[in-house]
Image (tube, rainbow, N blue to C red):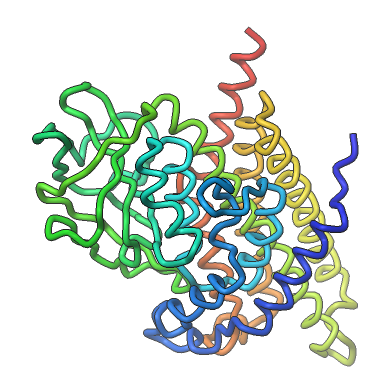
Length: 373
């Protein structure tokens, strides 16, 4: 079995890297009090739309490109590598949810607009505790005429304030279980409150619902959520693996240039060992992400296991690498002048979103034990 990237994959990754390195600047975030808006959050989205990336995973029937997770990994990795501020990730999560779980009518209504770049989506599934698994207690949906009305709250919604439509997880009072609903974000009953999110390269909000109109998705929660969760974990792992690689590159370059006691600090054994450890983590993270991308693309029986393992390892590796990078840079690494803190904050945030590495390892154990039983 050959897991090498083909020529098309490599060309896609290279073109994405060239574009993002040219267009994305984090300079405006390297000052106290900066927000994601300062880094061109909306403008970056317009540039991405010009390349059609928002339609990568949308089926051709809805004007998308219908590409696999392997091709998506080429783009997501480069966005993670540059910390590109934009509503891409939230739209991706919402797109996955709607494409897998929506009715034909819902998909025909929304997805062509997403593919064209005129519509943005977001996924609201987490509780205030941060968990996205299990019963939904903080948002409820009740029948009203031919549809539903939703009341309550959702937390940690990525790109929720920028979204035109939301896919919201709420307790369906009629069915007695959690289900997913399509909600127009522009109606009076929907309020998005931006959070003072430590990762200033990403926009995150809390969502307040008050008798908001919604349509239930066609697929039930127990069919939709496991499929969706695997892809969310894969996406965060992909960003993290590429972020680890970028942190390694920055730190290695600095270690070659910074001179202490008459020679570059990269010549000292302690620094060499740290860089070697970062390299090992980066390589293993990348391998795990590519295996998860293949497994998800093939709907392989081990896809859930691969996604959880990739998320656990890549996110933990990213945190460790970003932390060690700051130490190697020394005093300047702690300042706003450098981008180190931006990578560290992204690493910490990715690690906790949709289940920490510890949570994912527990899921891995459960899956392995279940298969062995």
